[in-house]
Amino acid sequence: MLLLNKLNITNQLELNKAEEKISKQKAKQLFESGEINHIEVGTFNGLAQICEGNGRATRIWLDLMLKKEVGQIIDWNVVDKSDYLTAMERSTVKDIEIKYLLKGALTDKINDREIFMKGIDVSYYYEGYSEFRIEDL
Image (cartoon, rainbow, N blue to C red; front, side, top):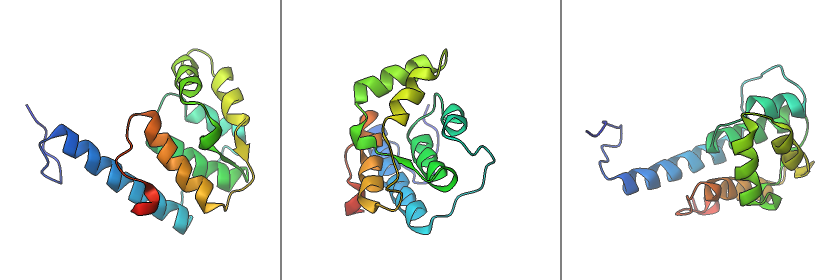
Protein backbone atom coordinates (compact mmCIF):
# COMPACT_ATOMS: atom_id res chain seq x y z
CA MET A 1 0.00 0.00 0.00
CA LEU A 2 1.37 3.42 -1.01
CA LEU A 3 0.61 6.53 0.97
CA LEU A 4 -0.57 9.58 -0.94
CA ASN A 5 1.70 12.59 -1.05
CA LYS A 6 1.23 16.17 -2.19
CA LEU A 7 3.45 15.61 -5.21
CA ASN A 8 1.54 12.50 -6.33
CA ILE A 9 4.81 10.62 -6.72
CA THR A 10 4.51 6.85 -6.34
CA ASN A 11 8.10 5.87 -7.21
CA GLN A 12 10.24 5.76 -4.05
CA LEU A 13 13.43 6.88 -5.82
CA GLU A 14 11.66 9.84 -7.40
CA LEU A 15 10.07 10.70 -4.05
CA ASN A 16 13.50 10.63 -2.37
CA LYS A 17 14.90 12.95 -5.04
CA ALA A 18 11.99 15.36 -4.68
CA GLU A 19 12.34 15.35 -0.89
CA GLU A 20 16.06 16.11 -1.16
CA LYS A 21 15.53 18.94 -3.63
CA ILE A 22 12.65 20.60 -1.78
CA SER A 23 14.22 20.33 1.66
CA LYS A 24 17.55 21.70 0.43
CA GLN A 25 15.73 24.62 -1.18
CA LYS A 26 13.94 25.30 2.12
CA ALA A 27 17.21 25.07 4.07
CA LYS A 28 18.77 27.57 1.70
CA GLN A 29 15.81 29.92 2.24
CA LEU A 30 16.17 29.56 6.03
CA PHE A 31 19.83 30.55 5.89
CA GLU A 32 19.16 33.50 3.66
CA SER A 33 16.19 34.77 5.68
CA GLY A 34 17.70 34.00 9.09
CA GLU A 35 14.23 33.30 10.45
CA ILE A 36 13.88 30.63 13.09
CA ASN A 37 11.73 30.36 16.18
CA HIS A 38 13.44 31.21 19.47
CA ILE A 39 14.00 28.37 21.90
CA GLU A 40 15.43 29.01 25.36
CA VAL A 41 18.34 26.62 25.63
CA GLY A 42 21.26 28.96 25.08
CA THR A 43 24.26 26.63 25.22
CA PHE A 44 25.97 24.21 22.89
CA ASN A 45 25.30 21.28 25.23
CA GLY A 46 21.63 22.19 25.55
CA LEU A 47 21.20 22.44 21.79
CA ALA A 48 23.17 19.27 21.07
CA GLN A 49 21.09 17.32 23.59
CA ILE A 50 17.83 18.34 21.92
CA CYS A 51 19.10 17.08 18.56
CA GLU A 52 20.09 13.59 19.64
CA GLY A 53 18.84 10.81 17.42
CA ASN A 54 17.22 12.76 14.57
CA GLY A 55 18.21 13.37 10.95
CA ARG A 56 18.93 15.85 8.22
CA ALA A 57 16.36 18.45 9.20
CA THR A 58 17.67 18.45 12.75
CA ARG A 59 21.26 19.05 11.60
CA ILE A 60 20.08 22.09 9.64
CA TRP A 61 17.96 23.28 12.56
CA LEU A 62 20.89 22.72 14.94
CA ASP A 63 23.14 24.96 12.86
CA LEU A 64 20.52 27.69 12.72
CA MET A 65 19.95 27.49 16.48
CA LEU A 66 23.68 27.44 17.22
CA LYS A 67 24.12 30.48 14.98
CA LYS A 68 21.40 32.37 16.81
CA GLU A 69 22.02 31.25 20.40
CA VAL A 70 25.76 30.53 20.58
CA GLY A 71 27.25 32.49 17.67
CA GLN A 72 28.78 29.38 16.11
CA ILE A 73 27.85 26.70 13.58
CA ILE A 74 29.16 23.21 12.88
CA ASP A 75 31.50 22.88 9.93
CA TRP A 76 30.05 19.57 8.74
CA ASN A 77 32.85 19.31 6.17
CA VAL A 78 35.26 18.33 8.96
CA VAL A 79 32.96 15.78 10.63
CA ASP A 80 33.80 12.26 9.47
CA LYS A 81 30.69 10.38 8.29
CA SER A 82 31.55 7.12 10.03
CA ASP A 83 32.47 8.82 13.32
CA TYR A 84 29.28 10.88 13.21
CA LEU A 85 26.96 7.96 12.48
CA THR A 86 28.58 5.86 15.22
CA ALA A 87 28.32 8.71 17.73
CA MET A 88 24.68 9.30 16.80
CA GLU A 89 23.89 5.63 17.24
CA ARG A 90 25.44 5.67 20.70
CA SER A 91 23.94 9.03 21.67
CA THR A 92 20.65 7.49 22.75
CA VAL A 93 22.57 5.86 25.61
CA LYS A 94 25.23 8.50 26.26
CA ASP A 95 25.64 11.78 24.42
CA ILE A 96 29.23 12.66 25.39
CA GLU A 97 30.71 11.25 22.16
CA ILE A 98 28.42 13.23 19.82
CA LYS A 99 28.93 16.42 21.81
CA TYR A 100 32.72 15.97 21.68
CA LEU A 101 32.65 15.31 17.94
CA LEU A 102 30.43 18.27 17.13
CA LYS A 103 32.14 20.64 19.53
CA GLY A 104 35.42 19.95 17.74
CA ALA A 105 33.80 21.07 14.47
CA LEU A 106 32.37 24.36 15.73
CA THR A 107 33.34 27.51 13.89
CA ASP A 108 32.51 31.15 14.44
CA LYS A 109 32.13 31.70 10.69
CA ILE A 110 28.36 31.96 11.10
CA ASN A 111 27.84 34.17 8.09
CA ASP A 112 30.01 32.10 5.77
CA ARG A 113 27.43 31.02 3.23
CA GLU A 114 29.77 28.46 1.65
CA ILE A 115 30.39 26.60 4.93
CA PHE A 116 26.66 26.49 5.69
CA MET A 117 25.61 25.38 2.19
CA LYS A 118 28.34 22.74 1.86
CA GLY A 119 27.36 21.57 5.33
CA ILE A 120 23.82 20.92 4.13
CA ASP A 121 25.15 18.84 1.23
CA VAL A 122 27.42 16.90 3.59
CA SER A 123 24.52 16.33 5.98
CA TYR A 124 22.50 14.77 3.18
CA TYR A 125 25.51 12.73 2.06
CA TYR A 126 25.62 11.13 5.53
CA GLU A 127 22.26 9.56 4.73
CA GLY A 128 22.96 8.63 1.11
CA TYR A 129 21.44 11.65 -0.63
CA SER A 130 23.65 13.36 -3.21
CA GLU A 131 21.47 13.98 -6.26
CA PHE A 132 21.47 17.78 -5.90
CA ARG A 133 24.08 20.32 -4.82
CA ILE A 134 22.42 23.05 -2.81
CA GLU A 135 24.31 25.73 -4.72
CA ASP A 136 22.66 24.54 -7.94
CA LEU A 137 19.12 24.89 -6.57
